[in-house]
Length: 292
Ligand code: GUN
Image (cartoon, rainbow, N blue to C red; front, top):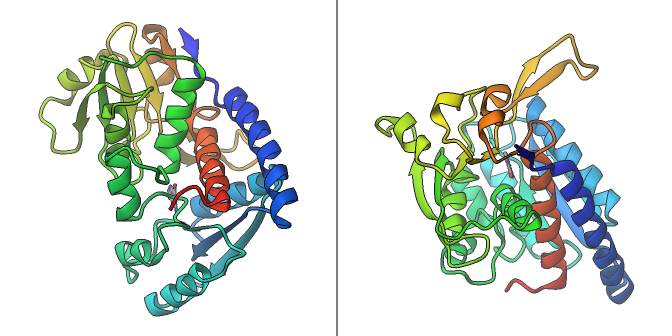
């Protein structure tokens, strides 16, 4: 069993981004700039946005966190997005999800100029991704592809089983793995809550991507010997064992699945760190204007 080490890979790629950011800053006279909008005070979202901001500083980007009270109206939020769309000193804009129930996430996503949509959630970017055209790729699937590429894992012809069909991870992951690209060229099965006999489907996977959001959901009896196992889960539970007051669990029962896997990502220290890298790479691309 080999570990797909998000800590090592993300650190290396972030060094490359730092060099490119410095070159951009020298040429443009300003740093690449990411704005993150956070509505309300969900603990998980606050942690993720703080980490995104911290990582921007680390690689030499400017970052701005705009916060709104949970009561903010959809119209006010969209007016702010439209203002940012027009600001030439802002390269990337993300609105942290989930949003409160009175705000339509699809309306918000489509309000963002697709050239600043560094989350890759806008339908223009999703359509372009499906057609292998220049686009922003959603950060988590992008990070996973970068990790597979880093370790030189040959995915061509392999059967990939993605568990979970979310807009943020499962659906885009299934497109990327099936695309005519490297990594890619997989035969893909996208499974979800209505899949019949999930265990049989997952057992067919040479690659298993678990993106369900349930602690230890993928167990050893569901995984083929020698499979490559990618765990996207970040399930937070309160804990007195850690300084932060919570502990993270993946969607994969790591202790029992790892001995069967050829490669596996740990939680924490796996996909989560690569998600940040995907976002930073997209922001740099946005600043350089290479995505039209
Ligand atoms: N919520 C969970 N993951 C993400 C993400 O990648 N981007 C945004 N904007 N919100 C999220």
